Length: 323
Ligand SMILES: Nc1ncnc2c1ncn2[C@@H]1O[C@H](COP(=O)(O)OP(=O)(O)O)[C@@H](O)[C@H]1O
Ligand code: SF4
Ligand SMILES: [Mg+2]
Image (tube, protein in one colour):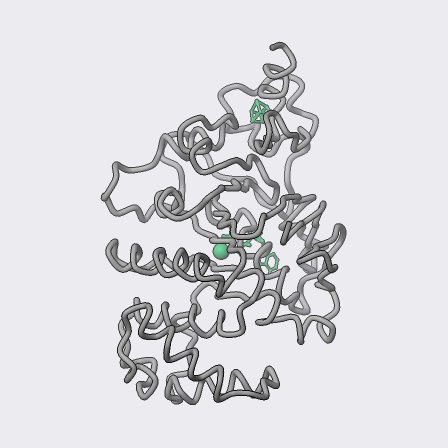
């Protein structure tokens, strides 16, 4: 098992107190698994992804632990994390493609990156980079370009290329297909699959608010709601037999295949996720859930209801017990 996240909680420090944006999140990722992390905007997806790489000073780990390849990842220790980044865990942050420094050529950005990670044999890595550039159908002259000379899709592929140059065990790709047209989304998705298949990355967490791209590339999908995981199962199960009422609503709101999907809120059910600064007690989906009942004022545990299928919902666990 390459990645295991156990009861992880992460909070932002704010003047009015801590805002817990990730609460008791647990999941595992097998070698080679591409896990999609889905959910509406503001539910904690980026916080979870960022926490596995870099806790900025506003953030703090308030519980839990993360293991990668059998070793604990010291996510709260910036210094200890430095040598683990890019080699064990790597992140393409949300909005990364607009963050590439415009005044440096891609070749210079690459050597800067390798220097900052104290890579000795840069020549070997650059040769491999050229091979990968060809593999994903970019021209070699991409290296002599400035990022502003590249299209959005090319920039996104370059950021993924750079993040995976040192063959990390885990890549976290945060909204890498958002803001791209459908055919470019597919090319970026295929690049993730190709890199996984060739072993350039062992496992991937693909974060997106858009479930339709995950249906194409992910082996499994975890659905997050208001800082907690609501459901995790194989992609086929999530798409065809979702059990959590929130997942069911997300799936029901998917557009038909091929239709562009820009929505960040659900059309099927009214309301919005609760504020994480002051979340309600019990199941956080309660005020939007058509099935809510008295027990839902307690927090439902994230339980395995079938092998490989975990759900946090009292209705679902009651039905499983009744069988
Ligand atoms: N700097 C911050 N200070 C306090 N709370 C924050 C900060 N950044 C994000 N949050 C809280 O964390 C929640 C999750 O944000 P984020 O992880 O970006 O969600 P997502 O990626 O799912 O859209 C937000 O709804 C907000 O309440
Ligand atoms: S625990 Fe209750 S409120 Fe929450 S999703 Fe299940 S039925 Fe709905
Ligand atoms: Mg985000």
